[in-house]
Structures are given as structure tokens and as C-alpha cells.
Length: 590
Image (cartoon, rainbow, N blue to C red):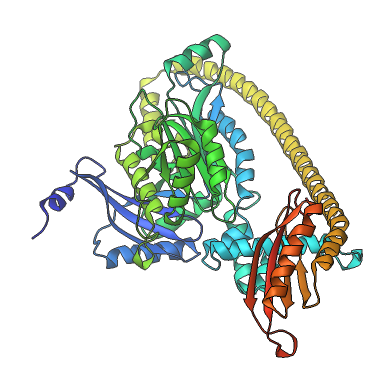
């Protein structure tokens, strides 16, 4: 028997009752059909595709929806893009007296261009390899550690001519046998396609409400007004609009993926919520309520995962005495770790948002995981009008319509109007009006020329400032690389000073029944030094570990861990394998 609630939920209320939502993260496309019913907005069907070409990916996803029983698709759709950026701007523009749209767009775009450049640095080759499924987070971390070791060895090489210019992540991954050269080249091409250097930004903005005390304070010191802004690369908007047009669908608006889940929170008007949303390469901490965001801070993850200390540090800065809980939206494999760290270190309750509780991280057949489903529902409810208007900013996915005088379909009406005016007018009135129009046109031409000259000068100033900023950024990168090299050489010098003393203490601890096989330096300053040895008897091995622990006290060191197991030695002699880890109070090479 069919559930009566399911029948009621299929009833459409208001217009639009259905919306097609496209979720694109650069590696996979998820398409969902969301329908509004008595029980609210629900995902009726969804499908996905991992094709890199947007038209092909959209065609496969729509075919999956039809195969799932969807007979008739909506003619309009919205896009959720991971390439879009969201920011909370403090602008000197009163929402009650906004500026013209062109001026507002330039003001917002100017603020978001630098943020877009910073976000593009997060999408490294390792991020693309993991996003395409060629690397796991564990493999990506191992390759990053190996890359750091090779870079350290390169800097310490005495022969300058043998040093490569740079240790690249892709080269290290290929050498490790985890990915192929073709996969690295594919991800390099994908990076250039997703983040072109000369791309323009299309911006959207929404004013955010503020508490009364903030408004009174701003009246006294003349502060700005909060605006939730969004920027979408023009190339991405154009590509997806064309892909939808091929399928007979009109792509209306585009949204950002980061921060979309915040719009679904149920917060009282007088309260504030603290919200943490985790994505593979970045995370966001938001404070406020939907339509009244007070703070939005974005940070980078480490090799595709969020370190609990980074999350706790950023949340602590936004925590106020009135906030007693934190809303968390994160991948399934990170929820428990983050929940435990936040609860222990901040002492607040963690509420898991949406479907980030127990359960698989993704649905069968490539369906979107819980975080993606929450973002789809949030955007769909904003389109359907069940969320506050100021909760989510968006941009139009269609190019602006031409001016009235450039629209050919209006030419017949303009001609008819001219004929009617000619019949009804008289010669004197027409001459007077013509003279007035010519004078006004001349004045407007002068004003237009002055404004165009001012715009040209402003464009030159902006271009020069961007060029100077690029030069400054390049110099800062050079200084950072030199500082890293100097730091590495200093650590290497300290290691060379410490190593002979450590070897002398190890030699002093050795007895006649054993020999040392290897001493491994730590890959990072302050880590443990690993040593392997072999002894003929268990007593000799135990005596070596005890003696070594006593001799290392002079250098401020101790045997942190030791392991003695039976293992054959030279010429298959029976004996004991010794593994110890040495720790120093000041660190080794720190």
C-alpha cells in the first residue's frame, strides 16, 4: 500500500513547484529534481556523471534521471558551482539607498578579485588527483611528505648543478607508482580549464540584517554595511549555460557551494548560530543567522582533510558567550573526529546538520553524498521561496538582455509609434522638440565623453595596480622560498652538530653481543630518531636499551619506545632485532 504522505508530497503548491538543480564540483556533476509538496521540498530523483566535458556530463546525468522514472523534466535549472566564492563584505552602501547595478557590480568585483586569486591557490595538482579519484587522502598525505623529504635532500645537495629547479607533486606521485603520467597530465589540463588566468568574475550580492545595537554603533562612527557577496567565473557560467541550452533547458541562476548549508539552519531572530562546513580543500566558519550573517571566515584544509586544531582555532575566535552549540556539516569520515575535538576543547555541544550523521559518505551508483544533498536542498528551497531572500546570494546564468533600441522584435512597434506621432504632431512642435532634443543630446554626449575618459583613466589605474600587485606577490614568493631554504640549512647545521654526540652515546651503549644496523633521521624537526640494531642474546639487547637510555640523559634525550623481537641476523644466526625511537627535549635539528 502506498504511503499517504508520499501521495500528498507529490502535490505541487505554488509556482514553481519543481526545480532542476545542477551541482558541479569540477570532478563530478550531480543533477537532482527537487519537488515542493505538503511535506516540503524533497529530492524526487537524482543522478550523476564523472565526465569532464560539461555537455557530455549533463547528457549522462539527465539520461540517468529519465532511467530512474522521471518522464518530464523542468525547462529551467539552477547551478551550484564549487568554483564560485562567497564572502561577507563591509561596504559603504546603505541597503535602503543602493547604488546603480553597474556601480555596485564593480565595487563588489573589486573586493572579490583578490579573494578569488587566493582561493585558486587551494586547487593544487594533489587536489585534482584526489578529486578525480586517483588518490586517497592517505596517499596524498604520503606523497606530500615524500615531496618535502626530496625538497630537503635537494637543498642539502653539495653540487649545485645537480639540484632540480623544483620538486613537483605530480612527479613524486608518478615515481611512487600511485598515479600514471596520463592522469597527471589530465589533472594539469583540468586545472587550467577550471581556473583560467584571464577569467572575469560575475558577481551577486545581498544585504544582511544587523542587530539594533550594531546599527546604533555604526550611526555614531559612520561604519559600513554588511553584504553577502558571490562571484562566479564568467567562463563557467557560459559553459554550463550552453550545455543546458543543448538539452532544451534554461539555466537561470548560479550559486556557490561553500556556505549553502547555512541557509537551512532554523535560528530565532534574536539568536546567533555558529556553523562549520567542511569541503575537501577548504572550510568555512559562519556566525549569525540566514539573512543576517555576522561573520564568514574561510580556511584551507591539509591534503584534503581538516585538521581538528585548525577547526577549533577558527571556531574559538568566533565563539561568543551566548552561543552554546555548533552546527557541523562535514564528510562522514571527519564528523566524529571534529565533534570530539570541538566538544573537548571548546566545551560546546555539536549538532550535526543534515545527513552528516552515521551512514555512508556516498549513495550507490555515484549519487551525491549527504553534504551535496544538503546543498541541493538549500538552493532548491531558496529558489522555491521557502528560505529568507537574503540567505543565499546568486547571479544570473544568462547574459544581460540587449537595450531596447537593439532588440529587433521591437522595431515594428517603434515604426508604428513614429508614424502615429508624425500624424498627430505639427510642424512647429516637431521643430521645437527637435531643437530641444539636439541640445540635450549634445549635453549628454559631453557628459558621456567625460565619463568615458574618467573610466579609461580608472581602468589604467586598476591595470597598473594589478600589475604592481602581481610583482609584489612574486617578490613575496621569492622571499618565502629563500626563507624556507635558510631555515632548512639552519636545521641541517644543527643536526650536523648534534649527530656526532648522539653517535658517540650510541657507540658507548653498544656491547660485544650486538651491532647497529641503521640510524634514521626524522623527516621534520622535533620528531623522533629511529634506530635499528641486532643482538645475539635478549640480555644483550635489553642491556643496550637500558645503557642507551642512561647515556642519552647528558644530551637531554631518552628512549621513547623500544621493541625487541626474535629475528635472524648475519649468516642466519639466531638473535634479536632491536628497534628504538629516541626523543630529545629540545627536538632533533629544531
